[in-house]
Length: 343
Image (tube, rainbow, N blue to C red; front, top):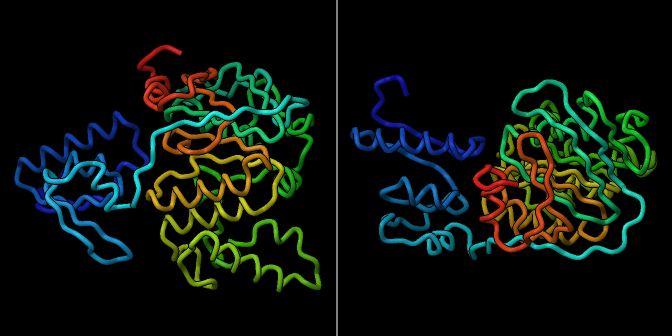
């Protein structure tokens, strides 16, 4: 942007930005428009498109299906053109059965350091077959919480327990083989082996469970099943880096969901996906895991929670955890996580 450009191409630029950063970016784009620059803005986020665009071109499966003038189309109409039916902005809270011993237990957790992502006295107990969401804007402690729950970061004090046993008593092999199915927020660094094939990256726990005699057959069957069930577009023996971002994400999510772990830890599980892919993964999560496994969702995007039957919602704000009891609309939740209203 510091160069004297005439054409600017932006491909999903807000995927990793917070709302305040998005507002600054949008103002820069508007200033460039007023200066007569040509801007090609690629996005599946309807509200962004309507705020910024003059003309809109809709693509489906690599083909142009429609051109419209931005001022002639409503948000609802554009959403239907882009992805079919519009998701209803509802948070679902379901009743849970009587509680016994916690499956996941955080006791007085505090993270090292005092920066924006620090944690302070986190206490949380999650019980068998619950689906609990922890929601917080970036910079409020979600990254530290994710790392501590997976053992990649040790807390300054406090304990993490799975099934009554402290996390330090598990080896990483034990934890991820049978206890924890993990979709990391950083899919590319923690969720995929980039120097390996799509086939290899599909396998996951099949590598742990297949017998010697049936190993190859079981691996092939599981990879083919995963690609079909989660609509992964790519050649089985091609490098995984050749997949698009959405296909990589569906691969990681599907591999974890079908891995039959006792607990699922999903960190920003739908970030950056288009509406169709989000709907597919939500449906699979509800069908395969809800009421069958214990699920903990960590997210900075309220849309990740739409139409998922949740047992409880917790808000992480400035490193502290607060219960959220209102199961009505998402707007009050949005205000909570950004600090617009007090928790």
